[in-house]
Figure 1: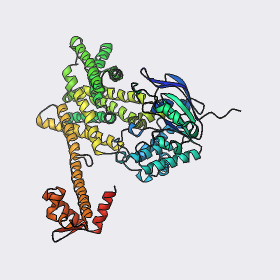
Figure 2 (figure 1 turned 180 degrees about the horizontal axis):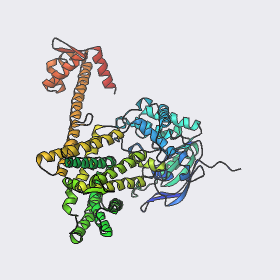
Figure 3 (figure 1 turned 30 degrees about the horizontal axis):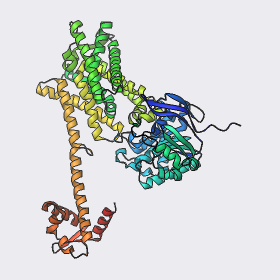
Figure 4 (figure 1 turned 90 degrees about the vertical axis):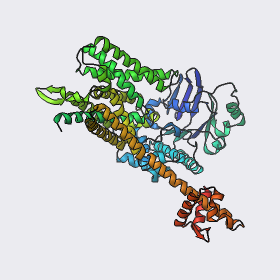
Amino acid sequence: MNAPSPALEVLDLTVAYGERPALWDVDLAVPRGTLTAVVGPNGAGKTTLVRAVLGLVRPAAGTIRVFGGPYRERRRLVAYVPQRGSVDWDFPTNVLDVVTMGRYGALGWLRRPGRREREAAVESLRQVGIEDLADRQISELSGGQQQRVFLARALVQDAEIYLMDEPFQGVDALTERAIVALLRELREAGRTVVAVHHDLQTVAEYFDEVALLNVRLVASGRVEEVFTEENLRATYGARGFLERPAVEA
Amino acid sequence: MTSAQLEIQLVAVVVAVACALPGVFLVLRRLALVSDAISHAVLLGIVLAFFAVGDLSSPLLLVGAAATGLLTVFLIELLQRTRLVREDAAIGLVFPALFSVGVILIARFADTVHLDTDVVLLGELAFAPFERFVLFGWDWGPEALVEMGFVLALNVLVIALLYKELKLATFDPGLALALGFSPALLHYGLMALVSITAVGAFDAVGSILVVALMVGPPAAAYLLTDRLPVMLGLAALGGAASAVGGFWLAHALDASIAGSIAAVVGIEFGAAVLFAPKRGVVALARRHARQRVEFAEAMLAIHLLQHEGTPEALAESRVDHLDEHLRWERSFARRVVRRAERRGYVVTTDGRLLLTDRGRALARTALAV
C-alpha cells in the first residue's frame, strides 16, 4: 500500500540570504534509483538547494526528507561532491588522504582511519580510474583529476544518495565520459544521484529526471516529459534584466 | 652553560613548540592574524580575572584569558558578518579595543602589581629562572616552564586526539559539517587552544614573540612539505631551533632574548622562502629557466619541421640566422641549439640544422597539445 518514500523530498522550501530569497517555496521529489539533474541559470539557487539538503544553510521555511527522515538521521546514506573550487588544493595532503576523508563520517569522533579505510579509498580510486595517483600531492592535480578525487571521496562513503554540485564543471572530455559511466553504474546498483548541471545539451543523454529551477521550481519530472522548450524558456527567459541574481553561497 | 641558561632555553623551546602546533592550523586556515588579535586581547581577560581573584598565579587567570580570546574571535566574526567591514579590518578594530581597555585598567588600578605593559608586549625570558614552582617542598623548576609544559601537553593531546577532525574541518568545512562534525565547535576549540597558549606564553616571552612563533615556523614548514604531519613536525622543530638559536644570538649580541628569537624566526622563514626545494624562489627560478629552454627547443623543432623540404628551408635552418627568424638572442640561440644537438633532436651540417627523427617526433607532440 505505502509506496517507498522518495530518495529526496523537499516541501515548501524557502531559503533566503538576508532578505533576498535564493529559493522560494520549492517542492521536489526525487525517486529512488534515478539520475536527476538540477538545472537553471546562475543564481537560480541550485547550489543552495544542495546545501540546504545537507544542512549547510538553514532554510527559512520548509521540510527536507531524505529517505523519509530528516538529514540529521540519514547522514550515513548521503554523500556529497562539492564544487572543486570550494576547497584549497594547496592544502598539504595527498590524494589517498582526501579520499579517506569520505570514511570519517562512519568513523565518528576520535576514531582514526586505519587499513580498512585506506583499502576502501584505494578501491574507490580504482573505480574512478586514478589509483595510480594515490600518493600524489593534491596541488599537482588537473581539474579533471580533482573532480575524480572528489567523486572517489563520495564513493568511499558507500551512500544511497549522491549529491553532486557541478560534477562536470571544467573537466576534460575523457573525465566527463568516465563520470557518466560512473553515474550509470551507481544507478545500476540502485543508488540515487542528484547533480547540479550546467550543460543543457547533455541533460537528456545523461539524466532520467530533471528539475528546472529559477529561485522557484519551474518544473520537475521525467526528462522526456518536462525538459521542453516551453519550460526552458520559463526557467531561463523569465528573468528580468533589472532583477539582481541571488547570491550563491 | 649555567643551569639558568639551560632553563631559559628550555622555557623558550617549550613555548616555541606549544605555539607552533596550533599555529599550523591557524596558517592553514588563513587565520594567522587572529593569533595577533588573541595574544593582545587576552590581556584584558588576565586583568579582569586578576581583579576577581587577586592573585597573579591563579589558574583562573588562564580561564579568564581564554574566555577573552574566544570573545575576540566571536566579536571579529560578528563584525564581519555585518558585511560592513572585511575580515582584516574587523580584526584591526576588535583587538586594539580590548587590548586598550586592558592597558587602561592596569595603569589605573593595578599599578602596584607586577603587570606592566612592557613585560606584556616583550616579555622577559631572562627572569624566567627566578620564579620557581615549588610544590610539596620541592622545586620543580621555573614557574614558566611548568606552566608552558602543561600548555604544550594540552596542545599535543588535543591535536593528537582531534587530528582527523581538525584536518577535515580545515580542508573542507562543508564536508565536515555534512558528515556531522561541527566545524564551529572545532573552530572555537582551536581558538581556545590558541588563547590558552597565548596567555601562558606571553607571561614568559611577550605577545609579539607569541605571534612570531605561531605564524613563522608553520609558514616556513608549509613551504617545505606537502604532508600535514610533517608540517606539524617541521614547525615544532623550526620553533625549537629558533628558540635555542635566538638565545645564543641574544647572548652574543647582548640583546633581548625574545627579540633575538623573533629575528631567528624571520631568518628561518626567509631561508625557507629562498631555498625550499619545490616552492622556494631559487627552485622556481631554476625551473622557469629550464622550462624556457625546453620550450625554445620545441619551438626550434617546430620551426625546422614547418620549413622542411620547402625552398626557403636553406635560409631558415642556418644556425647563424636563428636570431633573426625566431628573434632570439644569439647566445640563447646557441644554447638551445647545443642542448637540442646533445639530446639528438637536430644535427648540424655546413652550418645548417637538420631535424632528426626524434626532433620530428618532438615537434609533432608539441604541436598536438
